[in-house]
Length: 243
Image (cartoon, rainbow, N blue to C red; front, side):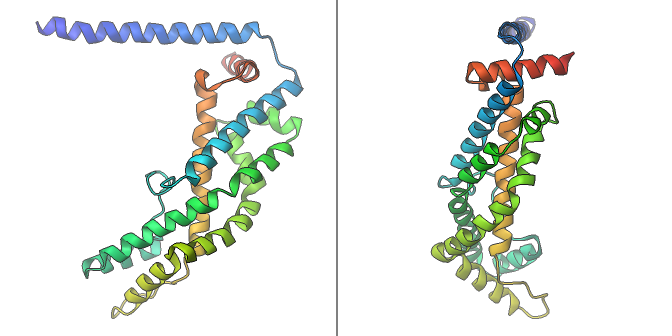
């Protein structure tokens, strides 16, 4: 009986693995049949992929709970304030700490709405050389490109939005109350009650983290290549990397 139970999963696994191999072979064959893309097709295909990935990332993070419910990007107390948070929770101010964390993430979600046009503009400015280097570059080559070309503009765009959002959702007050409450505790190192710069940086970090995930998905997952052009361009990249 035990041998039978063991054999079924192993057989099923064998079938699944065989199916995956067949799918990859079919996809590779289909990509090869499309032929090699021109330099212009490489640029257009990569821009299509990047617009798809950045738009998806911005949409996800700008939704309600886009940051707050995503453990990978959720914004917590600044590292220098973690001891303050622990102290406040130990003296019965846990609700205040929870309010701070929620409001920080709401501010980041608000700011993420500003990201899409900034990324689209960066994609439009991309040269043929940029596109080729990204396509055949590291797994996060596109993400690194965006970090170089958009961080300054994202910071300038996010900062006032986050400041306004922090005020709107009460984060400035909540964090200021938390910082001031902690600063009254005897013999502690005082913390800065201004939180906006920290949230701005964490919002941008979270955005790039999600973009990196989308970039890896389209590089690795054939089903994410949702148009003939994407299939042709990334199939060509796959063949060249495997050779």
